[in-house]
Amino acid sequence: MKTVLKWVLRIVLALALAAIVVGVWKREALTRLMAVNSLFSQENIVTNFSHMDRAFLTVPLARAVDDPAPLDQGASLALSPSIEQWITDRSVTSLVVLKDGQRVVDNYFLGTKPEDLRINWSVSKSYLSVLFGILFDEGAIASIDDQVTKYVPMLAGSAYDGATIRNVLQMSSGVTFDEDYLKFSSDINKMGRVLALGRSMDAFTADLTERDAPAGDHWQYVSIDTHVIGMVIRGATGRNIAELMTEKVIGPLGLEADPSFLTDGYGVEFVLGGLNTTTRDNARFGQMIANGGIWEGQQIVPEAWITESTRPSAKTAEGEIGYGYQWWVPVGSTAGQFMARGIYGQYIYIDQPRNVVIASHAADRKFREAGAFDQNLAAFREIAESLD
Figure 1 (spheres, rainbow, N blue to C red):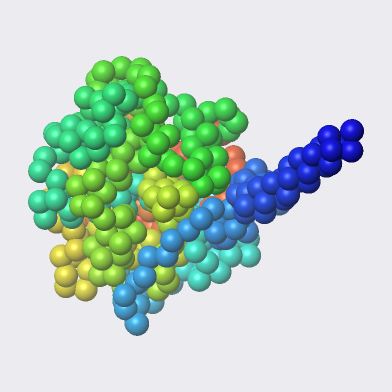
Figure 2 (cartoon, rainbow, N blue to C red):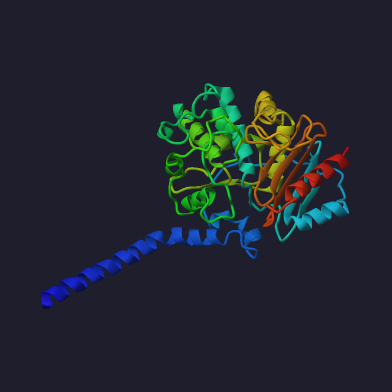
């Protein structure tokens, strides 16, 4: 009896020690998961969006320069009452407006500061489009009509088998993916938990097997398509996105602050929404795009790629907003008017004919309410038109 009791006590002790070890090992992941669960709460959202490293693993993107490229101060633009109201209504946290490359608005709200690294959410997609265009021009990817499995063999047999790079650039893969940000069980929120717990986003993507439609049949905004673009880039180059983005885009731009990318536990960047930058640096990026890919006399992005990627080539429904290669083209836009757009009110609005760039960050918990996007677009157009 004493022998049995002794073994029982040993087993209990071993289990207790194992629980302690697992608890310590998983504590960081559980802490991140708890932070994610309160990420969008009313009392925390503004602060959280400037400190995403508290909830997720991150990797820095070094600027590779000592002195940031200047953004000269131009004649200040007084904001109209309607713009002031928009700032309040949409919980705007920062607004930087460039006219002919000079700052005419550089304002911060709700306790944010110019040096804050703000989460871009899906504005990150447009950065990735630029990186893809550079690598495509360099020959790393042979054709955008290649199937994604040519560069990412692990997607063979998945829902992406048969989809081309053009399909994922245009959000036309046909893959079944629930993008409801406010539903706990949606695919996008499942992916967020994969990210927070340090699991593999590549494995998550390869496990998708269902399709709503044949690839290329119609447009359906699913952020997972952007992750596949990142997989294609990594497969084609054998390098990670942070290194490539630093070398090809971030370094040449001469930013004010080192951006950072959220990553999973395998160091894979959350390219569909995980880039953190200052608002001024988003304005720099936007101005480079407005310049046809040129910054400080250097052709960073091929002008032909900017033209092609920002035209509404995807099969969106007639009369609805247009989409290119990870860029949005609002209804009523003329050539050279397009935007990068992220949930909770993140934007880079570009008006090439007027040479106006508007970068804004926000913490708009009502971003999905009827009329929210229309109010944002109206504000950007009013600002741009006021600078004629």
